[in-house]
Length: 259
Image (cartoon, rainbow, N blue to C red; front, side, top):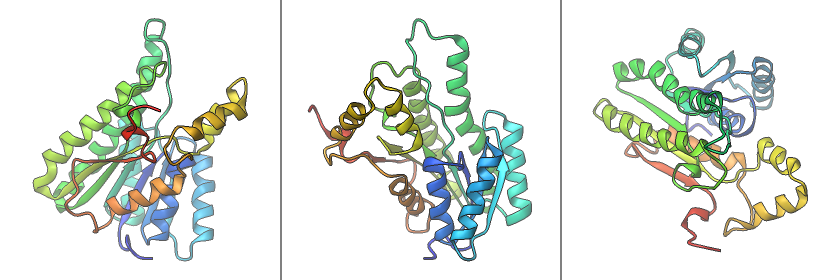
């Protein structure tokens, strides 16, 4: 497969879960991949695993804190020195912060927005100058179905994800004349380690898992690689006129009026 041959892609939060799946899929399609991850050891391990599994894969692990603009800029600079200009950015790094609005601490609010919204902007701001200069580039922001569907008890996470959609649309329109596309992907329930951790934290993990699997009309939840292949499409030259848009990956759940 060579849908991304010749492209350099930087993926934040690429050490595990959806980010790791995107990094693998990009490498399999011929891209040189930078795994920008807060946990440097995790990024190194995933980069080595990808390089060992995919012949000819070029990977680079860079310890990155997306809440710090200087850290993100340094990751982009290192990527460009090692592999060349960044053609594709995937802003995947994120955290779940769920709290009662009236008892939530200021620190919880700031932590949620620092990663889930500021982190996305920091990534965009670091790569946009080069993309604008070259008049080419694709930015993919991993949002969530929380960006347009509210689940009680999940505040302030959906507020940040609504912001990601707004940022995606605003930047997509702003830089469309420079041939830079900015899109989002909104996953629903995806079977990552975080999902398993949530199930295992419930009083009855098996019942929690069963209830989750019953939610989508397809009676299953998504797999990280299913998100990854959508990211491949948006990053490739097959999507040249998709811009300022959001693709939902939830098996139809958000289209369902009621159970």
